[in-house]
Amino acid sequence: YKLKEGKQVKKSMYTVPYMINMENVFEFYARAILKKELENKNYVVDKYSKKIFLEKNTSKKVSKNIHLMTYCIPDIIIRNNNGEVVAVLDAKYKSDERSSRSDSLQLLSYVLLTGSKRCGFIFPGDVTKIKKLREDEHLIVNTPFNKDTRYYELILSNNPIFSEINKIIE
Image (tube, rainbow, N blue to C red; front, side, top):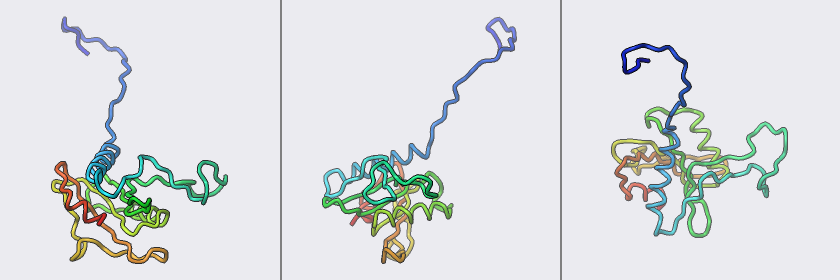
C-alpha cells in the first residue's frame, strides 16, 4: 500500500472478511413478511429454528449411529389456532426457474414430517405473486401418506401483496 508521502510499503495485514449470507437474509425477510401478514389472523408462524425430531416423543436425545439426521428445521411452518400445521414453506434465495432435486426432497421431507396439506417454495422476485402452476395457481401433489397436498411457488418482492400470500393459507 502507499503512504501519504508516496512511498510504497510491503506489509502483511490481517483483514476480517465481511460477507452477508443472502440466503439467511431472504429467509428472515420472508418470515417477517408472513408474521406481519398473519399477526391479527387465526394463524401463527412457528418460532425460528424449531426442530422437528425424527423419533416420536423425543426432544433432545435420540438414537446414536443412525444414518439420518436426527431432526429437521423447516424454514417456515404456519399453524392455525388449534396448533395444526396449515403450510410448510421453504425460502430459497435463487431464481424460481432453477429447481433442484435436493430442494424438492427437502420440502417433501417437511411435508411428511408435519403432515401439512399445503407446501411450497418462496423465491425472490420483482413482483409478489403466486407463480401460475395450473389454472387455480397451485399443483396437487399426491404422496402415499398425504393425498391432495397443494404445492405453491410464492414470488416475494420488496412490496408484498398480502392477497397473494393469503392464497396459500386459505
